[in-house]
Image 1 (spheres, rainbow, N blue to C red):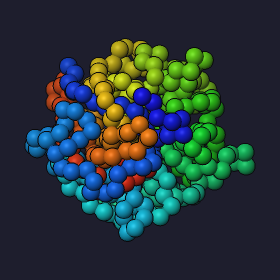
Image 2: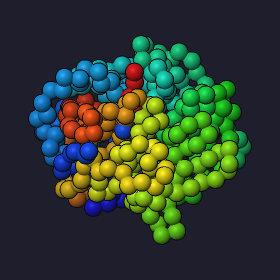
Image 3: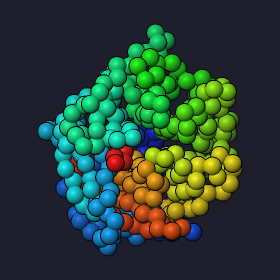
Image 4: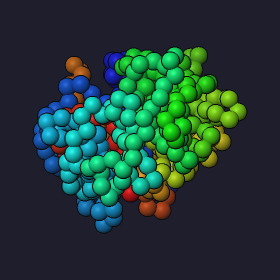
Length: 331
């Protein structure tokens, strides 16, 4: 089942039925109220009643969601089930990770926040857009090692992509996708970006944009990609289709090698908000169950951990919010 196109960029309509192999979006409309997802249940088979993970205390995921001081704000999740409301960020539309915390975008301001003090900004970048840029909110972003910001903006139907310098001057990305299933963007290094692009056959694929060479090259190994996430060290890439989740080193994806399948899909589950930690060994995702009328319930934060060459479920926690505008790992 595929969600209405107006929600397609926000969620990937998949449910996991198993795991094992040798990582910014708005949550669906109609999501259940906070607290409506009882502990020990999950829309994702195989991760209900996950045994506590001995390394779970190391997990820290920052979610931009509602329910904080009666509005939008930051939540900190520490596995296996601790949620802390960090503080309100009214009007914020996107969150991304940085080397030592997160960056939150509100209007034309990108505010850098340290993981040691997520309640207030350590620095602010004012975004200065060209006159030809669409006046849409930032819905996804990713800082490069040099401090540049990769940005995706959307009005809910159309999308555009850009790069902002460390001092906030924005240039539109060229080349860039003309259609995307989901407005996501991530740096692979200081000159290459990963995006989603729809090909001539209307198949959604990963694509690498080289801003130095002025090229956009599709990754043709897997089609029908709905969502993706890159680890903080830029070494691991997780991508989801409507039916499966795949994981492999970035170099293997770019080289056209077949990625390993982390899990397969079934039922009426839905996931979005993939996030991968710095070392590419922990994956977090927001999950829910969607009904025929599009109502989503059982919101959970679900995690997988890699040990050796195998991935296994590591946490499954009911979410304390009804909507989320993205999430990111924080050190």
